[in-house]
Length: 328
Image (cartoon, rainbow, N blue to C red; front, side, top):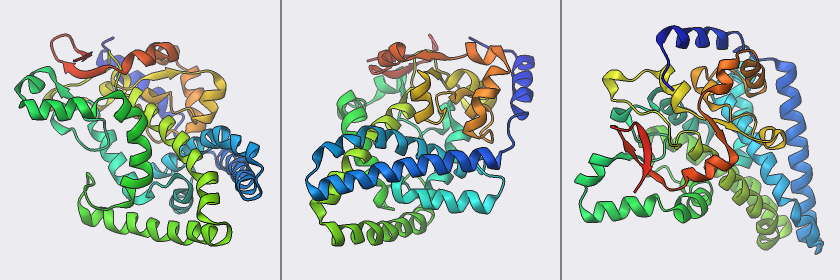
């Protein structure tokens, strides 16, 4: 669906009404989610330490709660969760201990993603690597094999997310932003992780901590990686050359409205309403649904059901002529 400028401006004005944080709602979401997560993590640690391995089944809800905490950290990175900028930074950095994501570095790279999503001339920071059909045809055979390997569903959706969140984010080398921007944030978090999880290992043993922590981290990384993929990698997404690119248009028709059951929407912190988030990233996640409910047209843009989302797995190339993402 294409949108005229008048409609885009109208939708943008509507979203402005929901951009102010509500500290009471923010504290309630943060406090309840953190308490539930820590309770689940504590029970799993107890189960691994005492041999009550049935408690380790809590890794599934704990993984969901970790995704929800990542949503809080994500909003803190946009300075949209609390009214206080300092509180946003403090809570965002604190949550890095659980999400394993360096708050300062990730926030900067994610801000670049918001200002470049859907722009063919500015790809490569905070997005899934995507090439056009013509670019793919001009690749060498070796480059094609590398791109096919990268877009292989097993690597992209199963192996890749845990490797990225648990291992790749530990190194300031090879990141999308300059080394100096990555070093302090990443290495500072690494030191904090060493102290916290090193202390747990010293107290309970490495195998106990691994049994209690890693399954949750794997689940959260798989869910988070999948959400990030379907938010922009759907058939009718939007890419445009830089001279014709508009951030508002790219937000509304290049970011999906991922329609999920309410329980999944809760665990994922409303991030499925991604078209609204990209249109105005200052709207806290706990106000996205009200924003959607207040403007019926937003509910009809870029809709992607759970069933439809699985058809996105094979998509890999942007076809400028058809204006669609297509398979190899």
